[in-house]
Image 1 (cartoon, protein in one colour):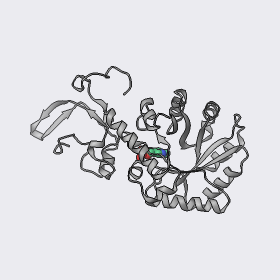
Image 2 (tube, protein in one colour):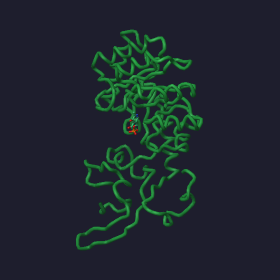
Image 3 (cartoon, protein in one colour):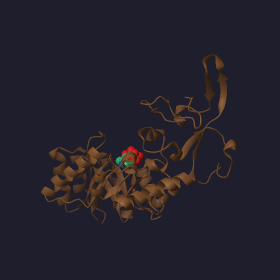
Image 4 (tube, helix red, strand yellow):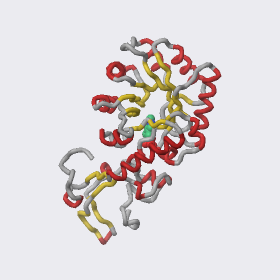
Amino acid sequence: MAEGASVGRRVEELTTPAFLVDLAKVKTNCANMLATCKTIGVSLRAQTKTHKTIECAVLQTGESKSGLVTSTLEEAEFYARHGFDDILYGYPLIPHHMPRVIALTRQLKKFHVMVDSQLAVDTLKDTPTPGKPWSVFLKVDCGNKRAGVWWEDEAGVDMALQLHNAPNITFVGVYVHCGNTYGAKRLLKFVDRLKQRGVTCTTVGTGSTPSCRQPSDNMKNLTEIHPGNYTFLDVQQWSLGSCSQEDIACCVATRVIGHYPHRNQMLIDCGFVGLTKQGYGHMDTGYGVFRGHPNLK
Ligand SMILES: Cc1ncc(COP(=O)(O)O)c(C=O)c1O
């Protein structure tokens, strides 16, 4: 997709290993997610960590260049420099981030941060704003055990109250990484508890790709979703039943550089850094699947 030495060349000519992206499939995947959002009546805050490119973020936002969530400040700054707005830095805030958060808040019409600790809440309350309030999401853990305040704990409700009451903060709402049926139900229960304390959430959002590609009825009660992997998809999504192999828009091209019949193995010019370091422990495919060769591992 990006300009470079490989653009316009035949796959056979490329140095391997090479990461290949099927642009037509990316376009379809992005258009389908936007259509899903329209159908269930939520907005899309697209995660950029899968691709980290301008081109794909343009497709994700339907060319509006508005409404992203990034995993690093570097990415947020990159998209801000390229004319994107309404960006959420989707990582738990710590005091060390503040100088760059201040600059992004100044630069963009809408820049949001995410908190899940009293330290982060205190940091924002105590830091003078650069002309407009801090815009803040509270990250909630509804069972997927990543970042976030535990949805059942009072501490999360208390933090939301503090954010809601702080004169230098706009409390935007709540954010959950995973939006399966349980996660969405738990999040909605948490939002109800906030309501009982007089705190309303403008935004109630969940991800991730598997739940957003097959949205449950509960998702109609949300205001936004934030999947990211759906742009390219991968073997893990396929193994979860989230997509077909044909939907996957990326693959790794590699060459066979050795054949060792005595141990029934071939050697390819691609290590696991070019595939996945995690492997697919729950599957018997190892580090990937070979297109058109289900017998190879
Ligand atoms: C904070 C956050 N939001 C959204 C996502 C998107 O999830 P997925 O890539 O499964 O769509 C991720 C991915 O890890 C994430 O960390």
